[in-house]
Image (tube, rainbow, N blue to C red; front, side, top):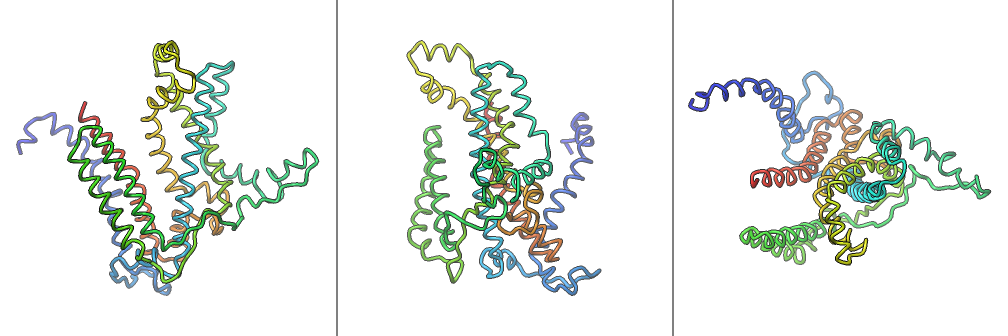
Length: 374
């Protein structure tokens, strides 16, 4: 082949060949194996689920249908809602706390190096260690609930990790309508960005798709109901403690990103804005925050994929059997290794993979596209 006539190309290919083979087998091969398993009934018969030669039948997407519309899989649907709220508050908390700390440190306070080390220290811990520390702090009979007694007040009664109270409940039957609306809004933003960037064809496609999806949501989307009854899901207050622990662990990471971005902004740019009469708020609003937008996007992508596959922190803080703080990764573990429903556990794993891919792939595509433009 002409491709191998160049010796350097041949040597380079031979060097990376073992990695390609191992990557193909242990990553993409196992992903394919997991996907195929999710299309079978492996585990539906407990008597032969773990036998040496289990009887496995191909049933298509039946496991996926049961997870999203089955009567006995309401826990999985609540787990998806838990993951959504956890992701939103986790990202907002990390970005807000990290940006605030970075702005304070950017002003060069006394002992900056000491505080920078203190803020970054939680990031050096594993989620298991963080979960153990915060579980002790939030335990029902001690920790945070005992703080009011130091000033003579009665102790707190909030069930940090065991509360079953939910707020902001929505019906699962509203999912198609809400999803279509959210995707339409995203497409509108993509269209606006495309028109501003001079990509008129891309803009027309995105705006047309948004219009069609919005039309479907307002007509057929309201009548499509996955369940024959209303099934309410919402934000469980037991997740507040877990979100606090996760933000405590990862806000130092966002602080480091923002601090590097702030230190990279030329001081002359700030001085020029002040000379032109800009206040400190206008300086941040019009100049600094827009320049930090790429850092914010990168942090959101990384934090987003961490939150989607969160497992160890919740396992350490609330245990595997605490249903109010359950997430899909934890349910996948219980379904696969305790209930021995191998196929359904594989289906949950594939759904998690798709969720993470939905976050990572667009970011990687945009990064690759920007590098090609350079």
